[in-house]
Image (tube, protein in one colour):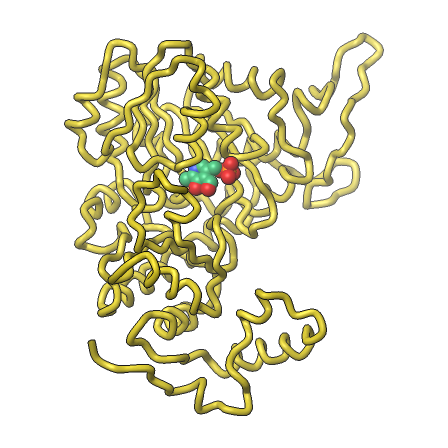
Length: 425
Ligand SMILES: Cc1ncc(COP(=O)(O)O)c(C=O)c1O
């Protein structure tokens, strides 16, 4: 079956009690035993299992081509459940630009577990091979990576891990199973922050772990979930599953839009570098083209100049929202080094973009007016009208975000269309 069909149907069926085609939300924490003392429908207590969680897990497993999935209350809870399965003294190899939250968790939460971790450039397979030790038990992969969009060769890393008798985990948050299925490339486990594309609407925090086969790390993660208590709420599972319905269509639209935005940025004189694996010049392009069916809705750019220059660009946007996170309907822009803190390795002039579902030309217009040397504003008339109405409606309670969204006064259209700050260089 194709992924669009699985996304809508896998893991659920018409509710036998009511005929509802959308699963009801099961808030009950406890379930009735049969006269024989058994649980005839397989549920006993919601920390151990819950119908909404089960629907979501079944759908995620189907989309990733996995055997089983576990849903967690956040991506970090899923990642932590994997790390908790390691023994003290085990060695992890992780990407040098791994999601900074994982690096913090390994260092600050699991530090006392005496885990040894080497952070290496995963795009350099020789570096990965050189990092392997007899105690290596886990190779963590994140591809495309956050925020530099580096690409790791999944099949090659899986091969290195097999030879080392280590397990592999791929954080597939940026790609989603729509664009990349790591299990098909012999990776053992996939994790997601379902907060991002899977939930898809910036309204639920969640995570997932999917396995290809029975293995000790997955079983320990299950225990850590059931007995450690890191379980997602039924409504959160429902929201994530609702997000899955439209995932393939959203991700492809965002991916296409990101490709066009990356092409626009690439030729812009104020942009020093664009990081997008869909571009032929990207160092990971060939590998991405092989193991992904699209290049995703995430990209980052380095503004020519200093951190302040990058901050100025972020300050000027009107459709993009300055916010962290990714994968939702709203396009977001973020000065990544600020959020990662003083020990970040992210370039200070880097802005990360999560492309939402707005019109691509409007998004390009917004970046164009925000970048130095760009047009002041080329936003479309319907957008302008919509924002003007919003401004009038919210006049009495305008938040700072409302203020940011407002366009220059409608009484002076000359300021909106065709005003150039400077042309050329
Ligand atoms: C690539 C990646 N993995 C994992 C996480 C952690 O997910 P969560 O915030 O749902 O715990 C994030 C969060 O931004 C992420 O970007």
